[in-house]
Image 1 (cartoon, rainbow, N blue to C red):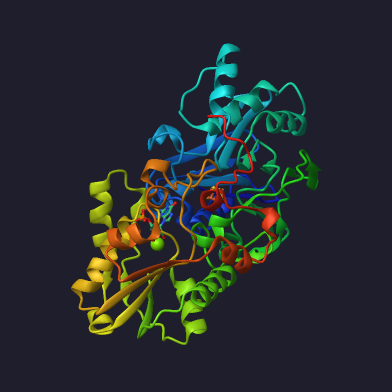
Image 2: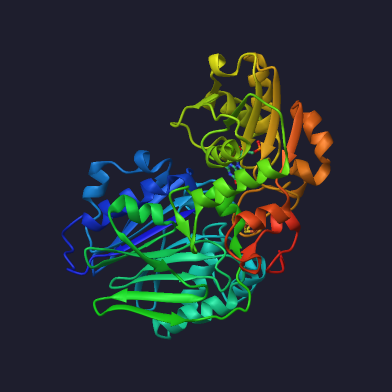
Length: 452
Ligand code: 5GP
Ligand code: SF4
Ligand code: MG
């Protein structure tokens, strides 16, 4: 998911400026979720919400934005990992607590939802959705006899897992991040106004200046007095998701000190160093494989060509629910450039293989277009374990590399050869220290024990 928030300090509650900026912010975060989108604005008296299924551009029209006047806004784009794909699970969630209204948008996935839900239900809470986000909302409400900051600290002590949250009350904008900093969240400034966003590309898009990442375990509260920062939780371990760099985040974002494009290029170079393949051209599976393919090309000296064209106006195929739809999705999305690949020995670079469906389709498409050989090079190690922290890398049974060795996968996808970057090589390529990253889907070392 993607989250965004802004606090306009002039406090004009008749203006839709905050909602409009949030719209553009969400637009830049669309890659983080295409299932639903929502914006909640606070006008000092109450919170107004609009959310619906679909892309940001489908959910928000000028007429809708016109109804969202208020000086604080938060927004969310959803990518479903827990809870079904229903409007009731779309965010922001708006709820009432002792002191008024709260809107909340969450990126990440809790690992002790079941336990907390049971505890809360025993205490009388009722749940309207199937998301872990509602559990966070419930906890905040339950602790609301305390000042907001203390209620948040108490909720953060209870919840385990990944969370980057933006929250708005009638008069405050809040951001907080789990103690290991699994999902990204950063702070920016736009003409003296504070902005929160999942990724720095959203700050760039709205013309805001990047200030810093929200620290793991930190709460920032922005109100008419400015910004206050509170270190709520400490952890000796950081666990920034390495998959953000590999696939999820946008290349023009910088997360926790590492630029995504730079990391992907380095992974491509490393992949080429580890696997020497004779070929005529390097092509990528756009868009997520492109940065790595450019790195691969540079390191190997084999020219990069545009071998596949992508229709950018379709949501990510991965998100469509059934296997059948997924197969059709890939077809709709990518088309080979016959002139480029015909008669060539092709190195096809992609960021990851999850189920293997994408690679299988594309290899056969390239062969159909006349490619002489197709060598698949993957800029991440085999995905062998599921993610419990907010990325839909599937259940273990669906992960092709959890069931098959490299040779069997090669055969399944129909490639002439198949190469993955090594786990060591991946860590080399990412500048962040290995101890500060989560790479559980590749090495099985889960930074937070998984209860559910
Ligand atoms: P596969 O077809 O092997 O299941 O998926 C691999 C392809 O899906 C790759 O091209 C990769 O860019 C993309 N991908 C990897 N992880 C995710 C994810 O979590 N969500 C979405 N939407 N796509 C993903
Ligand atoms: Fe990211 Fe993989 Fe860790 Fe999930 S398991 S947080 S996808 S590195
Ligand atoms: Mg891809």
